[in-house]
Image (cartoon, rainbow, N blue to C red):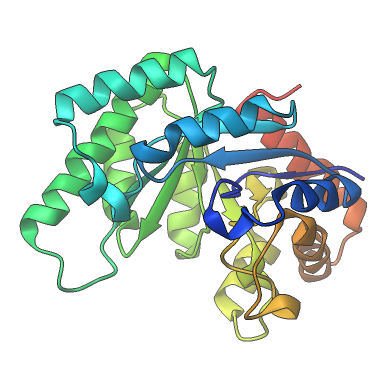
Amino acid sequence: MTLIDTLCHLDFIQFDPDREQVMQRAWDAHIKHIIIPAVANNNWDDIDKLAAQHPALHAAFGLHPMFIDENQSSQATLKDQLRQQLINANAKAIGECGLDFFFKKLSDEQRRLQLEIFIIHLELARELDLPLIIHSRKSLDIVLKQLRRHPGVRGVIHSFSGSEQQAKQCIDLGFYLGFGGPITYTRAHRLHRLVRDLPLDAMVLESDAPDQPDASHHGLRNEPAFLPIIAKSMAQLRNCELLEIAAKTTHNAKQLFKLE
């Protein structure tokens, strides 16, 4: 059995005390590849260096909507900087990027800025033919609208939690849906229906470590080695073999990120 963690923030400070051990536990748990997306441009170098340490670690670069205040560059400069970073570091994806309208106190200006920066990522994805890792909270309809305006882009909707109708629209646009720890929670009934009813061809696994641990590690730091628990939960929800989940989600991730 082999698994791929399509989103893990292995560069975060929570892993500073034992990062090597975390990685070893991941390899022992049959994790063959880990995608490490950036959240701000001040951690691009850290991710680049980390990905260079091991052939199974892969970098993605972008600007998370919740971290845009940390960007000190103009939008034109940001686009040029991101383009060069993606090319020079041989990135596997663009992200983490997207829209986050969860907080009601967001001003119209903050929403506008998120959208403008998201569009920069979309334009670069089409220009460089790289997949997107998209974060979307309380904004999926707007994300879908932008994806339609940028035909040809592809990627994954990270930690998908939308409706079945929205899920099918994402799939029709060529996007995969990322599922992680939340599917293991007993009260996550809508997620359970999505995992059970949507095509496995459209799903990938993600830890989102150190965040979003599975139910058995609630309140603890998440890590990639827990990914088999998510795969097992998915197999139980779909009433199929664990090996089928592993094989198909691994195939999907390899295809999306062009992994060996």
